[in-house]
Length: 475
Image (cartoon, rainbow, N blue to C red; front, side, top):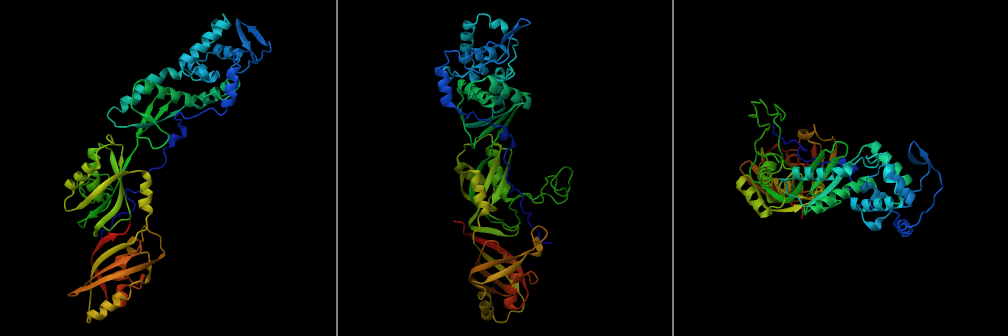
């Protein structure tokens, strides 16, 4: 049975990271800036007071306290134990800045207005953040410890907070906070950003396409770091037959490797693949975890790919290094795969290029050699083959791929047939076809599944000897 490369290996793209549902990269802004400005201008006056304070068991209970920035509103949130970080973000005094220093200043002013206020604070545990701001330094230390051996220049933070904390924070902030108060997630992320800036780390905080993504669990303080992949675009030539495009798992152990005598515990049906001949030296140089290979289509394992080569994108996963010169990477590939695979150049690209490569429908030029039994008149045979030039053929799903492709009839155009030559009982032709044409079936007809075919116009059985891709007209 003829070897056929498994389709789809290494091609599946990563889905969106689910943790980004929790992301708040510190770009939230007030929706009521004009109202906040008016409140700041009037903050020196008490907005209103309904006289409903009640002394109960030595503490003052405000049954209906006004919201910040009213002095009574400030006093109330101080009484319930709001920390300096949260006091600054819900007070409405944005002209004083943000962070604990601003909150401390607001607190001191409140103590001057009410000498007994400090003694009326009912708890030291902030009901808005549960003192999470106190752990910012710890979080930052964990992040940079995890990334100590990783190159990166851009970063995005996300934080996951318990649902009950968010609900309680929203309730208090909505009722007692100033209009447009900064929400908890954004404030914590901004505090983390500020701490990193204070440490003089050369990091840019971005919304899209960061080098690393960081997710913080606000309950356990667990820090998960996701080093984002990098992508390289190029074109490869496959000079040797018997090499699959992507890794081909061992049929016996299905890639599990351990204890498999069939594959020598490699987990691979074929040791070499275009993916690893190109990707492994690059993976090692970038100290990455793994690679994925995204080609513009694929040739069969027994088919060479020549000319300017087949376009591809190499996805390098979790690299520790990101900025090696591409010229050095090309030289590494050349040294790893002489006589097997060649790459002339590489360039950095984005994930968008993967979609462009995968969705391309480029015409291809092939040379195919086959045996044709019983040919008597070569000139007549040549005319018969050339009669297919420019024709549209119908191809049912070939038997060799029927187990993995839908049964249907495809219409493909033979753009041109440029050369037909004979040697003994063998024929060699060069032709250009529409993308998706099954060229081997065009020759031997696949038991009549391809109509018309070279076999049908010659009136004799044809057997394919070899096939080469001469050119992929992608550009």
